[in-house]
Image (cartoon, rainbow over the protein chains, first blue to last red):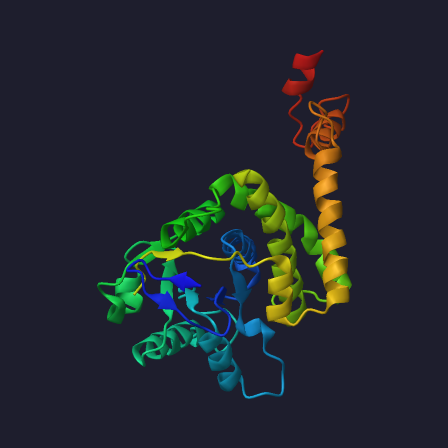
Length: 213
Length: 83
């Protein structure tokens, strides 16, 4: 069972799940792996819209996954227009953040965190969040680990940055095997995401626990 | 929101994660073996032995133009310095 820092208990279908709302592009791949490594090092299960199969109404499934998670992390660092014509910004991530905020405001136990690459940029891109703590990772793996450690804490088995790095490095080594086994060309698909999450969790079981002894 | 949160209680194990994500037990075993391989590979290298990246750096150096061939830009200062 999880609690807020004010001692409130969090109830959910998956009490240790965290919804990762991240950009799915090749440049973001190192940070994508860093988020998976970091949250599993904290003993949490990553969930993402990547799990959603085709054929179901996407919005229903997004909301179903989000509402199963007591935590969500929203990385709003992709504010640029994409290059493919017609050039458009991506609204999915701020939209999913809005769903998380609404879910919490509707009285559900849900804690959401906003991550960004650049300090103060969010005041321009999403000024409604003025007054909200935003975790700035500087677009770096180290920054993701640092900010996850600022956002989350554990009394027991608190992972350190070296342990998160260790999980990350081993996870990165597993990427070619995961792509080969799943027949995928990218990590941003359901099966690679599931495999990577289980591998990272397995690594965290061994690395973080060993570090505590 | 966005204030730091304290997580207390259980740690989601690989089995918990696999269950939450709908990964079959057989697949989970395969992934566990993959992790065994990754971690045993990390431990197998004896202390002080050169890493793969170090070895490839040495090989690159051996193949570098300074070792007997002209540099592509015609600058052979490095070569002369070695002689």
